Length: 243
Image (cartoon, rainbow, N blue to C red; front, side, top):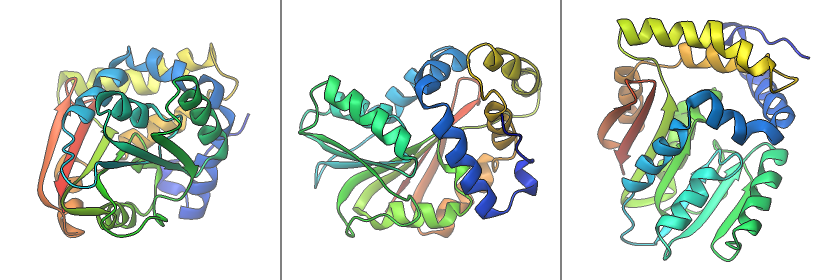
């Protein structure tokens, strides 16, 4: 079982390699652990994200860092007229997601491929919406990822980021910090051989930019009307910006 340095001590190349290693080793348990460790709130958070999507031009959606394809599938189920593309740089995750797409008989509308969120192989103005769920904290160059997500959406299109965050200072932040650093590692040891991966998860959440800082980053890349929607006492946040 690998040990990972603190997020603040990783180089960009280290972080990319570590993230690839982590998700390649937990693929089979990823969906189960997401539901368990969030108390199934991850399902509600994705549904809220999908409910905010606006398809008005291309009727196409890009899911960046799609993982096992949950957000892509949620979108396809909710909007039968929309074509969905998903990319992720971990082949094992993409392969698992493709199996889920086949099982739901959605291969004609959902296409998951290996790809890099900082170098998206789609043309400008190809999608009404691009989104990333629980992935941008793992990308060292967040500005490049946001810029690419903005490039591929049409003018007036949405760039959406759903990410685990920390509540405002007070009771819920203290409770959440205790959960991340104390309970989460113990729980994951029961269900995965690579429980250390979830130490990285906790570390990456605690070191993620504040809501104000992330909204400033969205503005810096050129997105307009940026807003942050805290979910479940702020342990998750949905960010939305317009091209």
